[in-house]
Amino acid sequence: MGCPWSACCGRNAQADVFAAPPAATATATAAATATATGTAATATATVTTTAPTQPYVSTKHGEAANGYPAAGKGRVAGGGDEESDDDTDEFFDAVDEFLSEEQMDAFLQEQREEWQRWQQQEEQEQRLGDPALSDAPGPGVIARATRAWQVILRESDPEDLDIEHVLGASAVIVEIYTSLGWSFRLAKTDLVGNIGKLRTAAHKHEVQASEHHRRTSSNSTNNSNGNSNGRAPPRSENGDGTDRSSGTESGGIRSLLQLLQYEVAQGYNLKDPSGAVGAIWIGRTAAFVGNTLDLLANYPNATLKQCLTQAYKEQLERFHKWLTSASFQSGASLCISREEFMKALSEGTTHEHVLQGLSPLAAVLMRVSEKLRHVVDVAGATDDRRV
Image 1: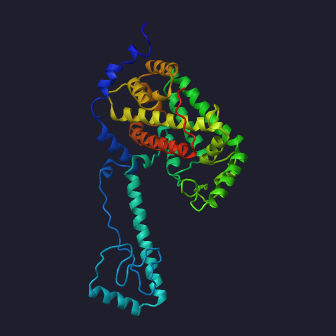
Image 2 (image 1 turned 180 degrees about the vertical axis):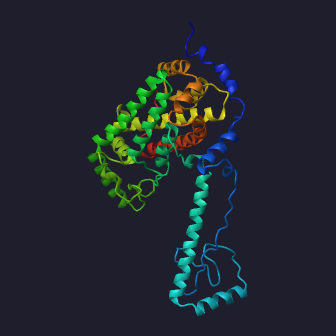
Image 3 (image 1 turned 30 degrees about the vertical axis):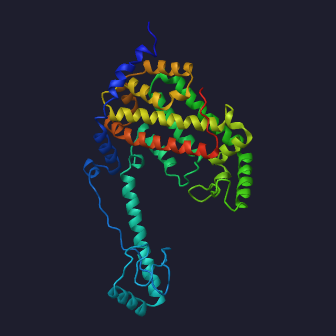
């Protein structure tokens, strides 16, 4: 019998499958957007909005209530045309003359609220047009995974993540690995192990990591440049404004950045197990699964084995030694069929719903993997050694 991970994996055929641009890109994109809006018709609709006039700045007040700097008599805040004709100046002089201070304040407040409503509407339209932020209603592992990973993507701090959110979202990826069948049981076990490494580190180093963060933040505050990089100390709050270092209900630090910074300071990040190792491999796994789902969505004629192998080459192969790579290739060569995998993902929902959800989930997984990698880089915990 030939080598299970070389001749049998169909690499030559795979090169032909992915050589041409994806035929289903337009259809997949429309379907992904349709998931967000609910109908295929609204998926292709283009919504055009007009920004409201930015608030007028009174010559009495000097600055608008929303913080836009004064642009001079008869000008609008936030820039606009640098020239103003006499008629416009006379109009605004009349406004200043006949409106009381209270009326002007009310007028500026109304303008500010109108501007904020327009901004919120624009952000909503951008979100609906982004497959990674499309709503994912309904049952099924694809919808659950999309919702779980979107929680991470929507976190406000660009340089930190909530460990509990990462752990919860990673657990849903374990379900996707389960759907791949018995040939991926080793990869599934490895992912479960990495989740455990991050969870254990968050609980084990809760007090020390929080104290390390307080010390470094205090030192950075005393530095006129913010920190050694000339940047303000990383924020450590959750979306509700509570201190992320205070821990979770079950115990353990919540800030991934604080945990990794502590591990780097102690030299733990290069050891296995550690929270850094767990976080790094969770991010890489997210990129691998996202890439696989994206290939499945955009190349309907590709087999599951071809999609897995291509995604592995793009996302994981450079981090694996020969033995680990051979083990993966063996599992891919013995994987279930594309139809069987889609059927497993469709449990509790419909096949069409799964197909519509592949692209949004792929998009959010790839985006979050980048976010995880960024947090690791900021903490100085990057480790590209082969395993």
